[in-house]
Image (cartoon, rainbow, N blue to C red; front, side, top):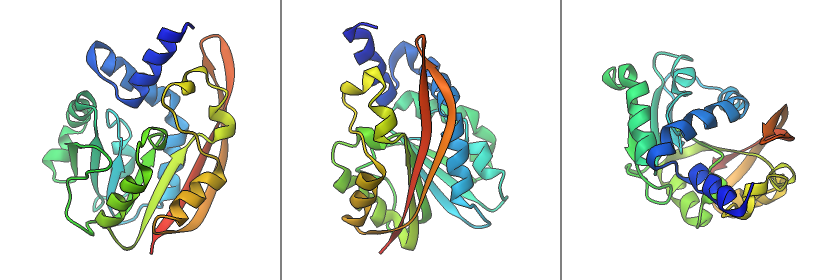
Length: 218
C-alpha cells in the first residue's frame, strides 16, 4: 500500500467518518472480535454494574455485555458521530429499556457527573489519546471509589509490525501501560495477555494478541 492509503486507513481507525464510516465500523468488529470478547470476559460483569465504554464504535458488542445480567447498565462514548448513530440504531431496544445510552464525546471531556461508574473500559483507543494524563484524570473523575479501569490494546511488539501505525499511533508495551496507570491515580491490579489467531493485513498474515491492564482507582 502507498503512503496515502496507509494514512487514510490510520485516520479512519482513529475516527471513522464520511462515506466509509459504516464499512470501517463493520471491519473493526471483525478484526477486533477476539480482543472484545477477551475484554468482556476480564470485566467479570455482575448485577448492578454501571459500565462506561470509551470508543464503542458501532456498538456491536453491547449485546454481549448486557446479556450478562439484566441489571447491568451501559454507557458508550465515541467521537465519531457516525458510530454513535450506528450504535444507537443497533441497540435501540436497550436504549428504550433504559439499559444503554450513547454519547458523542471525546475521552478527555466525558459528559457525566463524578463517581457514576464502577467499571470503565476502552479497547484499541489508547493509541490515539493526545493527552493520556488528561483522559485518565477524566476517567478517575467519573469512576466511583475503588472503581476499575480496563485498557485493552495490541502491545507494542505486535503493533510496530503494522504498516499504518507510523501515522498517529502511540504504541505501548505492557510496562509502558502499567506505568502510565500507576503514575495517574490507579493501582495496577491485573495484567492479562492472550494470543489471538493471525489476521490478514492486505496479503500478509500478521501476529495478533490482546493486552489488558486493569487499574483500580486510588
